[in-house]
Length: 309
Image 1: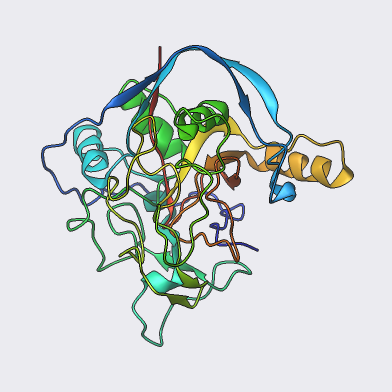
Image 2: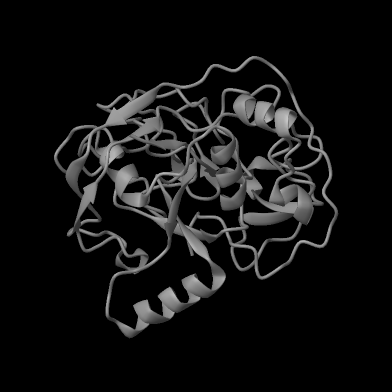
């Protein structure tokens, strides 16, 4: 188990689409950082979580691309919904998984979602009400949009003329011009007092000291950018990529995992989230990765946009 969100367990959408709550407002487009064509690499030869398929390190040739400096915000996603009438998959399913620590501490909390006790199934949770009815994004419009699926992210990307980055593009961008750093800022290991990104401080999942100032998401520019000018490449929210999830290994376990990932259409996510901590979910490293089925979403999943050339 990990802090990473659970995938939807084969449920199909059987509810009619409903209109989202939209908070309109002017939105500035984020800077697009240019990366020239290059010989690069993806993965690592020093994996920390081998079962996730972090290794081996593999050479790749990348065409020129641009990557937005921040993840997509609530304000920008609201504009997308207002202009297109788009209804997210969470709204159509009628529920989404929410991290229990973000919910009010009343005794009538929803049941856990699957075997992981800190994820709960909340009816009505969606991008505009991330923790369910009564929650809203009007006071966090500069935070990353969450509770969005891979398909939702792709729909937004098509609307703005972009796409989701590949895992290799994401890793190159996250390195920020450094040769082979463990983190977007270098190799310095964060701890509960040394803050580089929005991750967990304390004892997961019960105690978050919030030394960084945030229990959940933070504004997309709350922490220093990496050497390429990209914000939030570690922590805050997991970021969807365009790639299908696959482990590159000949082991029997890897084959079984790949077969399952293919059948359930799992997609690669990068960057970790505000729930990551070295003691439990050490996935805010550049080579770290996770996966969810394409229709899944959670309190800590978002995305950023890439463009060709």
